[in-house]
Image 1 (cartoon, protein in one colour):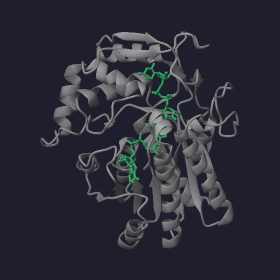
Image 2 (cartoon, helix red, strand yellow):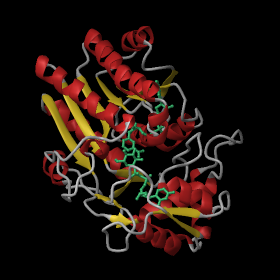
Image 3 (cartoon, rainbow, N blue to C red):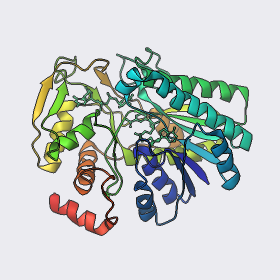
Image 4 (cartoon, helix red, strand yellow):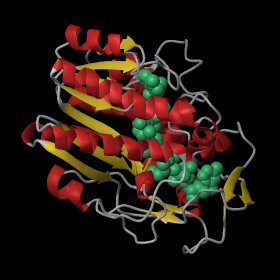
Length: 356
Ligand code: NAD
Ligand code: UFG
């Protein structure tokens, strides 16, 4: 059985489903600070099987110890954490406490329970402001410029020390580029509790009329159209990468890091154009100054993940935008106000087709 921390969240929910689809049993631990329990029955509906789930905090050691006794857990996928860059600047202790302290607590509980297989959600933010593209796993350019990024780097360093100190550990560090999109059913997607800061969640609110215009930060970057370039990756591709990583770790001891990206960079304006193309919705844009802390461009060299994990991203930018739009239309306010019954997969698919 796989313990999925943060499994009610955006990426964790898709990974929990991918695990079910791969025949694994899943227990989710999530304190719902940035997610909804509504995700759980939807994972079960799509996976066709029950998921065990516990409401609780990764910083609660007694709870973790109980979980490892109660369930036959043999590996952990660790998504739980806080991820808002701006908030991390204002509340650094919360970020270090949850992201670093929570990860240490989890590893201590794992070692105590004799479970040594861990997949950790890291981020391309650990590479800092690099000018050499694409970024491979050995690239050492800089340091993260905010507490969120620092917390990911510190956790990576803690895990590396752990892997060196005790050869029983099998640790996969996955450095995500920019996860976007949603499950094609329209049942799982990103449902942040706070106002959106990231490009695609903000764009979806504009497209559905909940926000007036999409800010486009910076038009003077050294990129083809002057806007920032990122490696957007479909969340279902990302989730599948976790299953491949688990399979790898079952064969290999030690610690290894992999980039999960497509290897392609798209600008803000290219992403906007793709969204308008697949949705038929025209987006009002609000051109602004550069956003402090943003890098001009960032995209992955995903060769290592292909060669070692046998994983490659399959879904293109149009698919990412189409699936994100389907999710938004089916869940205009995210999971929250869906006290109504879960819509059937068939009715959502029909709705999505009708929407083009
Ligand atoms: P998310 O906020 O949707 O999911 C995180 C989940 O963890 C949420 O369900 C939240 O309720 C839960 N959680 C937070 N603190 C917890 C705690 N103390 N105890 C138990 N549960 C807790 O975010 P996501 O986008 O799914 O990100 C998952 C992981 O991937 C995070 O570690 C994030 O830092 C990392 N990551 C995300 C991105 C991205 O752009 N989404 C990029 C790189 C890395
Ligand atoms: N952008 C806009 N308007 C917006 C929001 C973003 O123009 O309203 C632009 C940004 O300037 C950037 C691009 O869209 O050029 C992507 O921005 P996001 O906020 O969606 O994503 P980031 O690349 O800034 O950050 C993401 C994650 C971080 C992670 C980082 C590196 O949110 O957690 O990737 O992996 F650290």
